[in-house]
Amino acid sequence: MSKYIPSIIVGLVVGFVVSFGLAFFFSSLGARSGFLPIMAGAFFGVFTAYIMANLVGTKRGRAATPEQKQAALDFRPQFHDQALLIVYREGFVGKAAGLDLSLDDRFVAQLKSPRFTAVSVAPGGHQLSMAFGGLAGKQNKPTLEGFIAAPGEVIAFRATMQMGMTKNRIVVDRISADQDLVQRLKPMIMIAPEA
Image (cartoon, rainbow, N blue to C red; front, side, top):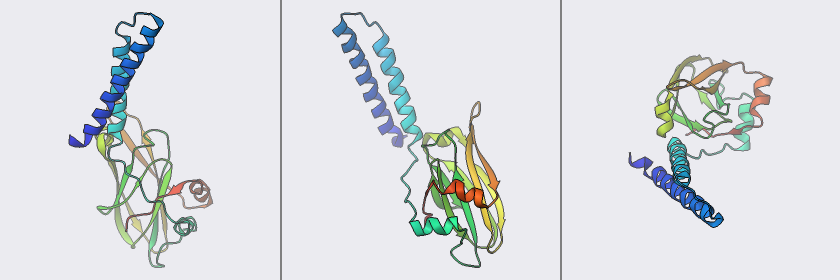
């Protein structure tokens, strides 16, 4: 709960500022405002606290170097006997919330939308998990995607969000590693994977 305290405090401040601002505005016009300033302040305060609480788990990722990005766009793993895993995120829903990527229970990177990362993986079976932190994590079902990597192979996944009635869902699609993928990734920022 303590990680949400800054969000709640900022929401309260926004609520008071909006309430007093509207009350002052109406009084300067000589009009009666009634409950409007309080209702508007409460709405904007709760909305601000909610948005900030959703972003609690989001952290700033380190952008990849131009060389790292070019190697990913060339589909070049770090070593010849490894495979290359590319994960990218698209879509507007939840785009500012960071999506945590873990490979075989080891944190790899966090992606906002639109961003991508690329990591070299050893041949064999792997588990890629995706989940949100903060309040966004409670509203979204985490997902787990298994894959088998062969030496020199490029495995690419696209992650998007799908709104649900009670929980949102992370939709993961396996994408062909071709020039269409390169063109899609080129304008995106690449996030360097954790060492």
